[in-house]
Image (tube, rainbow, N blue to C red; front, side, top):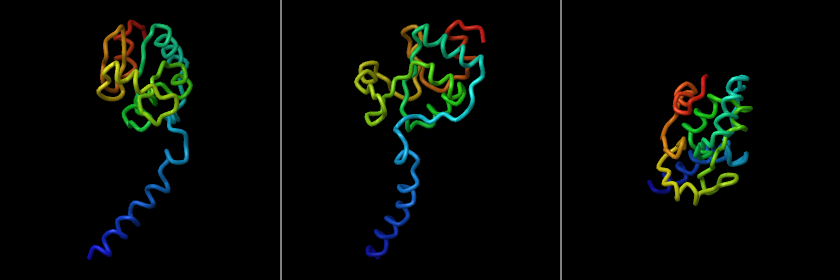
Length: 129
């Protein structure tokens, strides 16, 4: 029985490994939605006001959060990559900040865990969205 289970498990795992998107792409979030002019302005405002998003490239909630901004606005955000194998990783900073989950927003020195709507973020930062 063991002779059949191990090869079966290997066979079932193989397609997932071969087709995993992160094996063939950089270890960073790949945001695909288009930004609005307003989301770009908002992202610049967040960056200019010291708002930081702590993230991990493999985190689905981080991707969902980033898709709310769109790919152009996402490039404007101050994002700290916490995954050790992520591009431009700053794992030690995440440890020092005691980041417990992703995404985590740092706004005025306060850490806020979870996906936030752009409206929620605007209220927390004083931006009129």
